[in-house]
Every structure is written in C-alpha cells, then in structure tokens.
Amino acid sequence: MFNDDDPRLSQLLDGIVRLASGDLQSRIEVSPARDELDAIIMGTNLLAEDLQIIYEELEQRVEVRTQLLHEAHREMQKMAMQDPLTGLANRSALLAALKSSQDGDDQTQTQPVILLLDLDAFKSINDTLGHAAGDEVLITVAERIRNAVRATDVVGRLGGDEFAIVMPATSVDQAAIVAQRILAALKEPIELPDRTIRCGASIGLSIGEARRTPEDLLMEADVAMYASKAEGQNRLHVFEPGLLLVRRLRSQLLDDLRAAIKGEGLVLHYQPVVELDSGRIEGVEALVRWNHPTRGLIMPDEFIPLAEDAGLISELGLWVLTTAVGQLRTWIDAGVADSRFSVRINISATDLQSLQFIEDVRGVLKETGVRPEQVVLELTEVAIVKGNELDRYSLGGLRGLGVGIEIDDFGTGYSSISYLRRLPVDRVKVDRSLIVGLGTDPSQPPLVAAVLQLVRACGLEAVWEGVETAEQAEHLRSLGCLSAQGYFFSKPVPPENIPELLARTSA
Ligand code: C2E
Ligand code: CA
Ligand code: CA
Image (tube, rainbow, N blue to C red; front, top):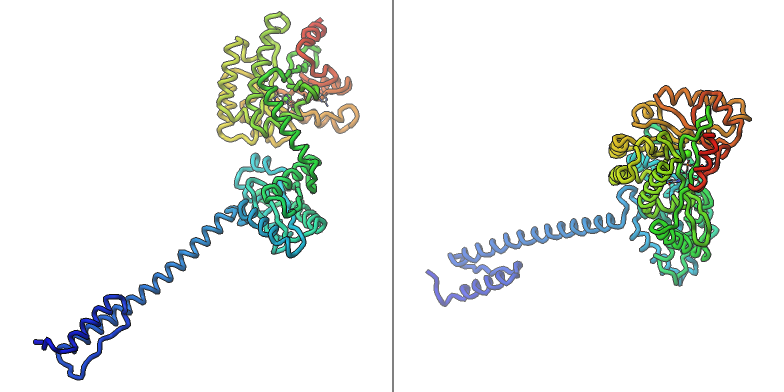
C-alpha cells in the first residue's frame, strides 16, 4: 500500500517520536498528495492537538489544585499561629512577633514593649457560671483589648485567661497609657445572656531590649503581672529586676512548704465552738498553721492559696484530716472529750473533687475508731455551689459515711434557698462579716434574725463565727442562735491547751 521510499514515512516516524518525547506542539507536515498516508498524518496531528488540549487542561487543573493546597497550608499555618477561641495570636505567633520587632531595633532605635494581662476573677466566673460563660468573657475581653491598641500591635492569648500585647517601637510611657486604656475598657460590665458581670485584670509590662530573648521578656512581664496582682486588682506594674528575687523567694517558699507537709512543719490549732445558752464547748475547729524554720508561724491565708496553686492541697488536706481525727481519738482516750464533742475540719474544693478523699475519710475513721458523727467537714459555699455532678456525688458519699457537713463562710457566696434545701448538709457557718455590726449597728439584729429564719426554713442550723465581744454573743443568744465561735470565747490554741479550756467551761 505504501511506497517504502516515500520520505513522508520517515517524516511521520520522526513526528511521532517528537510527540512521544513530549513536544506536543510539533505537527507533521501534510503533503499536497492528500493520499492515505496524508490521512494518517492528519489523524496523528489531530491526536496531537487533542493531546495538547488535554495536557494544557491538566496543567491548569494542577495549578488550581496547587494554589488551593497553598491556601490550605497558609490557613493551617494561621491556625497554628492563632488562638481558635478568640482569633488572637497564640503563644508562638506572639513570640515570633516579639522577635521580629526586636530585630527591627537597629534601624529604629526604639524597643518593643510587652504587656502581659491576667484576668482577676476569671476562675470563679468559670467555676460558678460554667465554661460557656467563661468563653463568652474571654471573647469579649479579646475584643476590648483589640479595640484599645493600634493595628500594628500584636494581641495574643497565651492560654487560660492570660493575654499579651506586643507593641513594636514604643516607649514605656506610651505603653503605660495603652495599658491604662485596656484596664479602663475591662472595667466596663460584660453582658452575659442571663447576667452582667465585671472582670478586671492585672497587667505586667516589660521592655524588649534586644539582648533579651522573647521567652525571657515574657517571663519578666509575667513576674511584673504577679506583682501587680499582689498589689490589688486593676493595676499595672513595670518589670524591675528586684521582682525576680520575689519570685525566687516564692519558689523557695514552695519548696519549704512541700518539705513541711512531708515532715513536721505543719501544726493544727483548735478553736472552740460554743453552745451559747450553756457556754459548753461543743467542739473545736482545726485550723492549720505552718511552723516555718526561719519565718515563724505562718497563717493559712498565706500558704493555702500557694498549696492550691502548686497542687499540694490534697496532700496537705490528708495531713490535716489524719492529724485532727487522731487528736480527737487522743482526747477521747484521755477522757477529755465526750461522745458529743466534735472536730471540724476545713476541706478544699479540690478535696471534694477527688474520690480518693472519700476513701481517705473512710480509712481514717476506721483506723481511729472515731464515730463519724464526731467529725464535721467544713466546705466553703463557693466550693459547694459551683458543684458539678461529681461534687454532689462526693458530698453524698461523705454523707453516706455519717460525717457531718457544714457550709463555711455562709453569706459570702451564691447559695440560693433551693440549693440549701437540696444539698446533703447539716449546718451552715455564717461568715463573720454578717455580724460585725451586731451591738453597734441597729439594722444588724433584724438581719441576723432573718438569716437564722432562712437557714431554719431550709431545715438547717447555724453556727455564728467571728464573735469578738460579749455584746455580740448576747445578741446572738437572745435572737435564738444556738452556737458560735470567735475570739470572745477563745482564739485558736495549740492542742495542749484544749483540756484546760474544756475543764474550765464544764466546771
Ligand atoms: P475559716 O475556715 O473561715 O476559719 C476561720 C478564721 O477566722 C480563722 O483564721 C480564725 O482564726 C479566724 N477567726 C476566728 N475567730 C475570729 C474572730 O472572732 N475574729 C476574727 N477576725 N477572726 C476570727 P485562720 O486560722 O487564719 O484561717 C483562715 C482560713 O484558712 C480559714 O477560714 C480556712 O478557710 C483556711 N484554713 C484554715 N485551716 C485550713 C485547713 O486545714 N485546710 C484548708 N483547706 N483550709 C484551711
Ligand atoms: Ca472554717
Ligand atoms: Ca468561715
């Protein structure tokens, strides 16, 4: 059919080789003969054309896909640099921004300033109103900070309720003005769906000298923030090297506390709870003190929060429980305390949340053989009311052991009447702030009477704490209150003083 000598055959072959090698634009020349061979050449050219179009489409598609992939990658990077809740920069983005504004130093001759901000009441908002409300607060705070700074400032959330702002090329004075603006913005109330709250903040400021690493600067701002928290709420503190010493002392104190809990460093003092009518001491409250080797006796308000922060509170709580119930056993054995005498023990919210604590109470009762009715656990109103299911389960479990349960600091928190009725508690200990004016302020007796009535309407009884004067004691007695506690009767005393006190009041 074909003439072997026809030069178009080798042209066709060449053309196919070119196409096969990827040169999709090459075409094979058609001869004027327009014979069968030309038809094959034309067909091959058409195929080449198709192939080229398909190839180009493919290339376009790959390009689009690649672009999408890049976008997704950028988005992912952004997500990795962004706090998902507030859309602010996260820790790594913030450190990167700080680093790059420090690097700009050489030209501009000015340094960045970093502000570290921590909300003052966030934990209790989260605990009492729930996480959804907590998130709402964080989002609002993020917005207010954003609106208080320049667009070139980088605002980030470092986690929890901690925010940071990097201000490139700023003077300390300028930064302090911005910090005050932020504090003012945060003082405004925050509207939540079913209530309005306020949540101030404490701010620490550090100056981004080029020779410091971003991590160091953040740490310094953090140290300054702690200092402003210690001074009270809604404050700004500028970092100074002396603060590092304060931090070192705190961590030294923490080491000491750890050792004290393990060793012999803690002691319990006991404060009588008195029956108002008879003056009989019906029991004592165990109050922990820390006998520090160099600082002397440290009061619980100073180290309980430290223990809570550092995760030592359970260990401390177990020591208090074991020691106080063991002491009761000793008093019973010595014939000092009768079967109506009780020991009150303060327990922390953390204890309530641990199922181990119920086991610990059970174990201590079994070991000492003390009757459970003679042990009363005091829990603050806040710890009980924030109560989730687990807490209620724990309360039920403790109640099941037969120990008494009392709400401490009653009147300072949020308990509602419906709560009081539902909770497995026996008594409330009314906070001393409710009786301070008793004997001087004429509006106080009706208030005390009303609180007493309310408590009794819930089927409970009240103990009144913080009684400092004979007038207060007499007022409470005449209003029908049954028991009280306070400096008027006795300060908290070491255990060796209790037998004498008991002997004196029963005589
Ligand atoms: P709290 O449970 O409300 O204890 C009563 C505090 O009021 C005690 O202070 C007590 O010394 C003091 N107080 C007693 N009577 C009067 C009075 O007439 N006037 C005044 N102004 N104060 C009076 P303390 O011992 O410093 O304890 C402070 C807080 O530390 C306690 O408050 C309690 O929340 C906590 N705490 C004490 N011991 C323990 C413990 O073993 N475990 C736990 N988790 N917390 C404890
Ligand atoms: Ca108490
Ligand atoms: Ca109290």
